[in-house]
Image 1: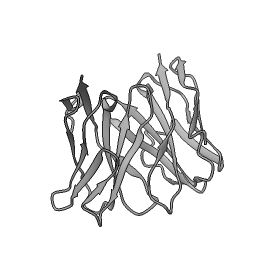
Image 2: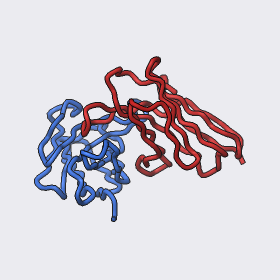
Image 3: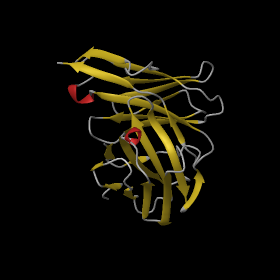
Image 4: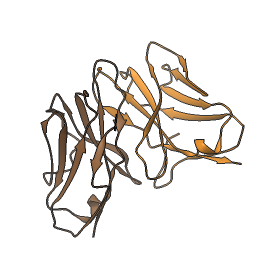
Length: 112
Length: 114
């Protein structure tokens, strides 16, 4: 899920399929991870978060998986819908109350 | 709750002019963050405050940028003088530290410096 240059990585899925968006984080000391969804012209919107003492957390239609060994985070969206089309950002943080560092984002496109 | 409120939504100005962006965080939140978003650099943290005190301003690009938080319900980000390379979307976000780092973002200010 890392971008190069001006273009965001893009994931294109068929409506109803499951989506998996990946993210590599940089700081092994990070203890908090979060996914945001950003639609065009809007601010990032919280989706789901996870702390480093967990490997998996589920929400409504979304699941976040954390692999601390390889510093990898993924967001799974079940039964993807056209309304899920957006840019998805992962972010990492450490020291409770501190700042969040965002990844470059992945653009999800859902085909009807 | 109205969420984080930013103004203006859009700002078009000429190079050299002063620009002031405004933010009202969610009531009860004690941390406030200013981010800048561009296609080239993504979401960059400029500065954040905790209990109205600047904690980390290492992301502020240069002395032309300044931010203040005179009270718990208001913050400003000022650019003086503005330059075309400052064109971006500027987001304000707030959170309540102690229950996690989940940030709530405003709708952003689209700044265009001509």
